[in-house]
Image (cartoon, rainbow, N blue to C red; front, side):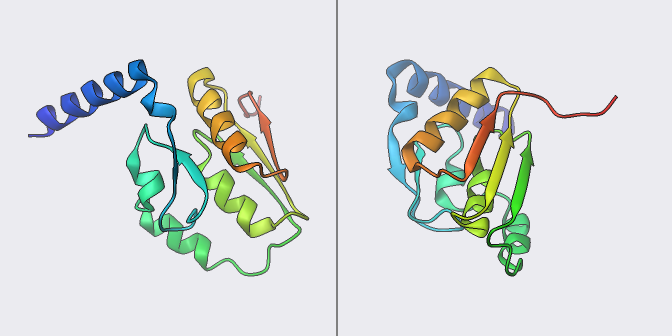
Length: 129
């Protein structure tokens, strides 16, 4: 069953991407990004508010980081960058690092849909030597 589900997901993703519908903006209905705009594909868990519920619960317990700074290493499509942005508010700063060109483009698209000036994108990897 997982094999079939994976292949159907991949086929749907290919069809959505080729048709241009993958970048169709939709409004997030619930969860920590409720009210923000996201793209239809990939991963509906982001805009349905069901992505990593345990981690979302931990974020909801953070108190008073307004005006602070946060780094999102390997930001992927920006799910946690956007949560950080809500937490730090407009007086804070979020630096989102994403080295993968495809993920970075999707992250940039999500930022352009929401216009959050506290998020600063970096197409770079972070590590130590």
